[in-house]
Image (cartoon, rainbow over the protein chains, first blue to last red):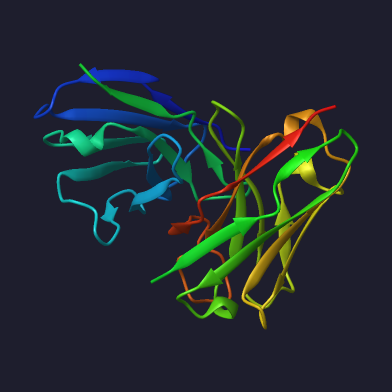
Amino acid sequence: DIQMTQSPSSLSASVGDRVTITCRASQSISTYLNWYQQKPGKAPKLLMFATSSLQIGVPSRFSGSGSGTDFTLTISSLQPEDFATYYCQQSYSAPRTFGQGTKLEIK
Amino acid sequence: EVHLLESGGGLVQPGGSLRLSCAASGFTFSSYAMNWVRQAPGKGLEWVSVISGSGDSTYYTDSVKGRFTISRDNSKNTLYLQMNSLRADDTAVYYCAKDPYDSSGYANFFDYWGQGTLVTVSS
């Protein structure tokens, strides 16, 4: 199975900050990398697929980059509604695996 | 608007069985692969199983093979997960999640999720 490792596991930031979350795959996954946002008690929401394609309705302050084994999710200017847990997920091979999550908290 | 609504969760003893359902609306259900993804309390996400749009192809994560069965009834727009020989480590919120592409293959990611149903395995 492909292991996905996110860093950091948690992050404190302020409204307006630029934030970057990293996701590393245990082997090359090309650009088959997706990002989800989950708020407490809610289902995950797809933010980005294929590394850098924004899901419909997701604000443009979210962006993604990377290829091979190293990927990043960047939020250009944090908004209050962005404080949540973020998960990366590889769709290169079965089984579909997720990172352990990055909890983004208000500083 | 796509809507997925899970049901069937609850408290079950170790070794017991449970059947989860996911009622779908707002899209042509039979055209899309569907998945189950679970999340243990306070933990991350784990993909469990996928079924093709026609229902003739299924895949499972290793830890549930031989115990869980995914199925669908396209006439009722409903996805199922039959869970047998349940263990304490199956305790989780179970989400149904839709594949994003209208195709015969699998995109292997998930564009819409239900709200989840909690399964607790405990004596």
